[in-house]
Amino acid sequence: MSEQEKSSTVGKEKKLLRFEVFWPSFLIIGGAALLGIFDNKKLSDLAQGTFSWSLRSFGWLYQLISVVALVFVAVITFSRFGNIRIGGKDAKPKFSFISWFAMALTGGIATGVITYGVNEPIIYLGNIYNELTQSGIVPGSTQAVFFAMGRCFYNWTFIPYAMYSLCGLLAAYLYFNRNAPLTVTATLEPLFGQRVNGFSWLIDTLSLLAIALGLASSLGAGLALVGSGIQTAYGIPQSPTVWLFLALFTTALYTVASYVGLDKGIKLLATFNSHIFYVLLILLLFMGPTLYILRVSTAGLAWWLQNFWVWALDPIDIAGEPLVMWWTLYDWAIWIAYAPLMGLFLAIISYGRTIRQFMVINWILPSTFGLVWFGIWGGTALEWQQSGAADLVAVIKESGAVAGLWGFLQRLPLSQILIPLVMLTLIISFATAADAMTSTIASLCTRNLKRDEEPPVWQKLLWGISIGAIAFFMVAYAGGAQGVDGVKYLAAAGGAMVLFIFVLQVLSAMKTFFFSSEEVEHE
Image 1 (cartoon, rainbow, N blue to C red):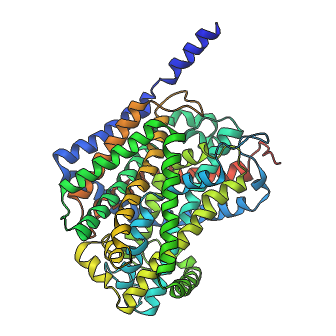
Image 2: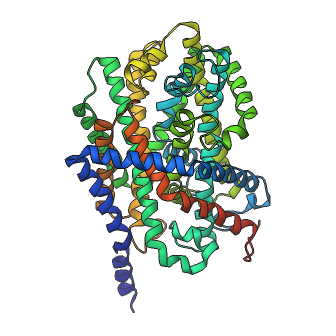
Image 3: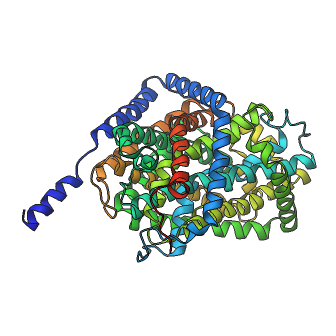
């Protein structure tokens, strides 16, 4: 065969669709979007049923496997395996440390820390949805302040980022160092060998569905938050029309970014977005009650560490459903929903780095960022509530779980600048994550795609629009008591789809590095 014929053959291979993954996934996601159009109550009921059943039945497993993932990541980071270079000894990184961290941070953070940096600690402090009832802590007390800060640290730092890091490391090592395919199925080959490829359609389809539902959940939460901000700041009531406009704008942003590719799209979005994060943190630290922030953050760390094992092994029964199921297990569900495909994205951008560098960028630094973010934003909000400078508890009770942020920002100097800036950051935060994931989803549905190749544009557009549609229907018609109940249902449904795949990935990572018959190379 001539070189020209080979090139032509390869070109054709690039365009092959993985029908066994694409069609089941698209029919379910597209069907959910259509169901939202014609019977949004049925869509909400299905998601709610999955939410309640999965977290009540498997809360114990979510908690156990999250702790195992944390221990594994900590051990491998500081062990001799940390010197292994992803891609081999001669591999050279494609991205600088700053760009790499920006993509890793914003690609996985979506809208979460902005949505809950103020709202979550205030909700705990005020016992707004009965989170403190079973703990015996008095709402509004000093103990409640320390609990609120410590619980946020627990939910948003080292455990969730360990989930991403484990999946990313496993995919990166197997793909770049052992020449395995860049698929979720390939990460299970150390456990089952080539036999697992017979189930690749099922494994990759479930992983795709999970991330699609997780993205829809994140976008829905972002729509609800920006909508409440528009109402608070500009007096425009929240409505399906407002949410539809926001959904169309955000979906257009991330599909266009995905269209232009990894280097030009997500890298630019992530760098811009991370700089906004840094500016907001610095501004608030110096404008806020700095000493109080430092003291309450330190006390929150103490509370978190003192209660770590009780929180980590609570299947729901110790602290009760309002706290554990609706917050921690919901968080674990959405992180696990993201983890298998987020791992593929983190793997792609980690070429040329050592395992220890990988863990610093994807586990240690994002977790530290979570501590700083909740310490500064949450600490300021808690001080205002306790001192009477602002009644954010009342704002949330009146306007929903995501409304406290805007009541908070309205009382800051430069609020007329900060409010639209935070709205922009929310939209870009989600667009960055969705950009990364729609590209990864499209790659998973494409056969014979090489490392530096982009998946078909039409697939990116198709997945982006479908995810945006589901998010809109869930936030517009299934808000519930917290205003974001519908999107929480979606997240738990996504996590339930891949919970057992994630468990197998944890076991596969342990076997790959600690119990494999194949020698692991060291530098």
